[in-house]
Image 1 (cartoon, helix red, strand yellow):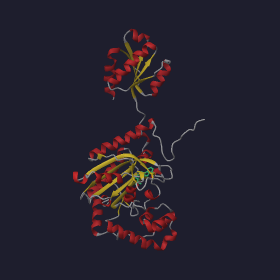
Image 2 (cartoon, helix red, strand yellow):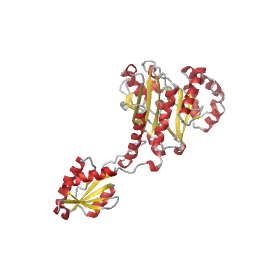
Image 3 (cartoon, helix red, strand yellow):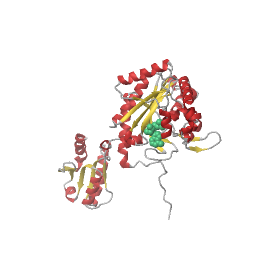
Image 4 (cartoon, protein in one colour):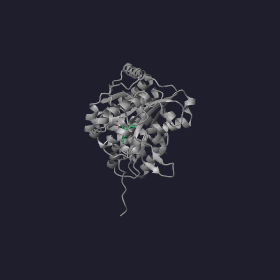
Length: 425
Ligand code: AMP
């Protein structure tokens, strides 16, 4: 017996009957992104491993534990992309976009890959809708708040309304440095109480201790008293302006001083959107400002802000009535005999030529079984061709919603159905 292959762990097939809900969220997102003047951007699904190491930080979990490397060919190892920002920045620099436009408002939709331990809402291949706004001297609380409002409005357009936007600021790079110093000095006496991961993070990526889910770590973090003393006066004003701008857009948010994000590149505004209905993997999306990444990767001094939303988690959280029924079909043709089949085959082409979707069975079976197939395909009209119809040069046309039937001359049936379908579509 030959081996049966199965789906790789942590991936999923998107079956044809699931596609309408994917198409729904993609097209809604595209509509809203257009209102905000964002343009689509596509990069390869793999890049040089070094790009991810340099941009995301050697100590981030994504680089440390989850990069899926493709080949270890000398220095230039390639890895599947774990997120979208690094590649956009690589391409932004390579194509000198900073010299071509004052601000590049970009978005992407596509698969990302992380070698994680799979569980509900956590996959090895998942999909994101992501947004990046990059440009020289574009750091503005208004842009930060607009980007957050955009992410909220995209989620609302899917019918989601149980989510919460959490925001925080890390301050400018110098503030961030001060923040990590203060954190280390406060945490020093409690290192033993931290989980094994966080004991390592203490040296390498101390911020991550703040959002660790471990109970012991949470207890230690709850006892910290850092406040916002690490922020410069300028950074404080920036953050106040972000909040003011969010309020002016009527965007609800809560402040969360433990929100730090796992990646090195964030500075100033960071945010996360969570939905408690999702259980332990409750983040629908996240983002923030990253003013130094472009220069870190060899480009100019360019400011940037962005976010990514997880599409699988959006689908898990979406209200069921929002998930569309399978695509419908305009016309199904039922052929009663061989001669009818030939006429049906010709009509199929006529209907498609009229931009109507049409199908039929390619073998002649009973009327009952063909009607069953018509129902299954959710056809709006059924065209029945039998001996009697062909003798009169006509087709019987049945409206499946009202069950009304009429006879229409064969040479007029294409145009007639086009008219009827236009009036109901
Ligand atoms: P991140 O880049 O980790 O902030 O991810 C942004 C969003 O992508 C998250 O909020 C999730 O919705 C989604 N996401 C991240 N990792 C995974 C994963 N392994 N499986 C499914 N969705 C994910």
